[in-house]
Structures are given as C-alpha cells and as structure tokens.
Length: 554
Image 1 (spheres, rainbow, N blue to C red):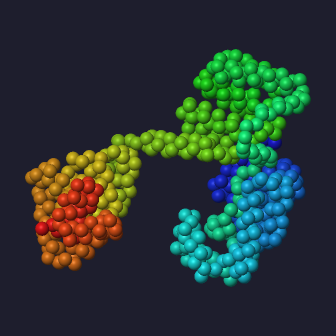
Image 2 (tube, one colour):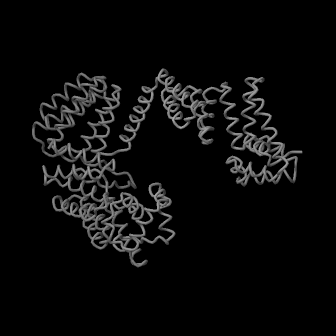
Image 3 (cartoon, rainbow, N blue to C red):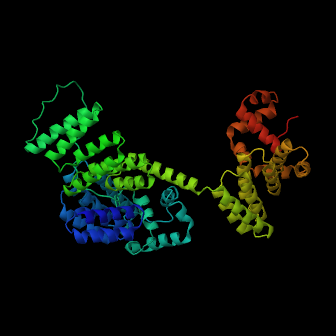
C-alpha cells in the first residue's frame, strides 16, 4: 500500500504540473500493484483526458464505474469523456445514472446541464462532429470565448494553432489524434464546466444532507442513541474527550496523557495522533509534532482513514517545518496535503512558503564583492564595444547587489548603445529611485529622453541634475539643447501635437471625457481655470498638457 500511495502521489504531482505522460506512467505502475483500486483508474482517466486521449479516458472511467458503481466521481469521468468524444446522448445517460446515486453532486449536475446545452446547440446549429460543440472560425462568439480567456487568448496569435482549429473544423473526428496540449485548454473553454481532468481523487464520502431553513422555533431534537461501539473504542473516545477538555484549558500535560491512553485503547484511529501532535505544536515541540503526525499518517493509510484527516496531518507537519524555518520541507508537506485534499487555506500556506523561499534565495545570492567583479567585467566589455555581453555582466552584478544605483546606470548606457531606449529609461528610473542625488542617473535619463524626442521630460531630468550641481557642463548643455528643440517644435503646431500624442499619459488625459469637458469650459470661460486648478488631480493634468505644448494660457 505504501508503494501504491507513493506512486499515486507522484502521479498527482505530475498531473498538477501538466506532465501528463509521467502521471500516466505513475498511475499505470500503481494499477499493476493494486488492480482493484478504482481511484487509480479515475486518476489515470483524468490524465488521459488532459492528454486529449479521450478513448483511453473513457476506458478507465468505465473501469472505475465497474469497480465502484456507487462512487459518483466515476460517472463524472465517464460522462465528460463521452461528451468530448461527441457521444452526447450516452453522456447524458451517464450523468443521470450518477445523479441517481448522488442526487446532490454539483459536478454531475453541472456536467448534465452542459451536455444538455451542447445537445440543444448541436440541434440548432447543425452539430459539430465529434467535438460536442460548434467549431466555426467564422462564428464571432467562438472567437470571442477564446479571445476573452487568459489561457487561450495568446494562442490565437499563433498560425499553427489556427491551422489546428481549421483541421478540426474540416474533420472533427481528428480530435483524438491531435496531441497539441493547447487543444485541452481550447475544449475546456468552449465546453465549460465538464469535469474532464480534476487531478486528485479519494474515496467517496457522502455529502451532508441539506439544512432546512427554520421558519419557526422548533423544540430541540431528541438525542439519538449512539451506535454500539466496541469497549476499546468507547474507552478511547472517552479519553479523547477528556484530552480535548484539557487542551481547551491549556493543560497540555493532562491532554497528552489522555490522548496517549486513547491511542492505547484504539491504536487504529488517526485522530488521536493528530490531536497529540496539536498539543506538541502548541508546546513548540515541533520535532515531536512531526514524528506524531508521521505515525498518524502511517496508521491512517493502513486503516483507510478519511483523506481529509491525512491531509490535516500533512498540513500540521508543514506548519511545524515552517516554524522551524525549514521552508523546503514545509513546501513538500503542504504539497502532499494538497494532493490529498485541495483547500484555499493550504494553497495560501503553500504560496506563502514559496514566496519566502524565493526571497531567501534572492538574499542568499547577494554578494557585493562578486557584484563588483561582474561590474568590472562589464566595464571592460563596454570599452571594447561588446555592449550585449556587457549587459549580461551588469545584469549579474545587479542580481548580486540590487541596491547599487551605479549598476543600473551602467546597464542603461549599454542599452542606449544597443538602441534599446525603453530598457535604458527603465534602468535610469530605477537608478534615481535608489539614489535621487545620483547626478549621473539624471543626466543619462535626460540624454535617453532626448533621443526618444521627448524634450519636455528630458529638460526636467537635466534640471534635476542642475539642482544637484549647477555647474555641471553636461547637464547645462543638455538643458540648452532641450530648450532649443522645444522652441523649434513650437514653430510647428503639427510637430507639437505629434510629440505630445505619442505620450501615453497625454493620450489618457485626452481620452478622458471629463477632461475634454473641462478644456471646453476653459476655452469658453477663462475664469473656470481657477476653479479647476483647486483640484490637485485636475491641476496635474492641466500642467501636463501645458508642458506638452497642447494648450496655452494667455
């Protein structure tokens, strides 16, 4: 069982990472060891579905239903596989059969609604071959769905992707032969909520009955007699309840004693291990907490415990490693918990740890001495005119010491030589953001803006440099040149408009209906200007248009 579970977890991880071949391989090996395990067939069906191998997905789904006819997930798998193969009527029958077993299952309800809609669309539109939907590249709604989904939006810019869609439009029966992974994303978007590839499965747990809304006060329900329990389980339960009371009172030593007695009476229940681990966690005995959780997981696996309890134990191990600042192990166990039972809380914990690990790696990489070495290599290459290679060394230097403004300034110089002015400007902005008194950064920014023909912003940059050093000749010359350029542009209104409208900020202001109305008021009633200038946001926009030369105040 341990080997089977290990293969299953490995397959789940591969499936989550879109490594479908690896997932199929793991599930197949696990099935060879445990051929009666319906969960493994269900998971492999998901992997086949994501690989666009719908016939194989259907075979495994049918095997799942055969092995576990009272498990709703098998019907969901089979129904979606049939839908993707275009066998819509059979898909409807399958979903209906699943709902007879589990009437409140949302996956089955959603799947049934989808395939019924597919059938209705097929009837109205003349069908779509084996796809179960209308694959028509001339249909605006078809392209609208793909263009408005973040997964498929970029695909439409690829001629090979469009070629694949045209093939399917001509011959939908080829759907099972195309191995392009983007086909899965496309069909998921177009069909909607069909459950073709939810990664992980567990044994079926019946859903709780829906709660009735209380319309009037009702007497308290009569306490149902508890089912007869073996004496050892009854004694274990009593000890657990005593342990819970002690835990609430923070009497941890008593809680430990009671939970240990509960384990002695019933060593097959994972709950007692989890509760004991919780006490150790509160006592900050994190190694003991981990050890107890691992024993609990082993016990739970042997006795087919609820997957949520096993997930809970994995989560607690992850939290213990997090407290120990062992981020790598914390990540491993949060991922294991996710493979058992996916919840938003665990996903958040995993994201937090990954973020910490990334930041730790970044900090560990910082080394000012090595940054200086890389900078010198970059300087030598810059002098030799090998600007592209110099950029690589300056970039490495920045990674080694990201708070040194000179490194960004040097890389900006390389970008300027390579005519990558937007990247150079970005580095200059970072440079002066790190050190607003670094005069070389302002001057370099001014020169780049001059080349980009934005003399207004360039003049501002040179002015910043002159505020730091009024006698800096490079800044003085740059400022004068910007003034001459602005005067020259002033003689040509069309040039003013062209330059101004190339500025995204100006474009946004001019598209704003409120600003257009304000400008119209100012033209008809100059006194309105004073009122509008009292609003800081509007004043900033008006000054921007003044600097750009689009408006003038007389």
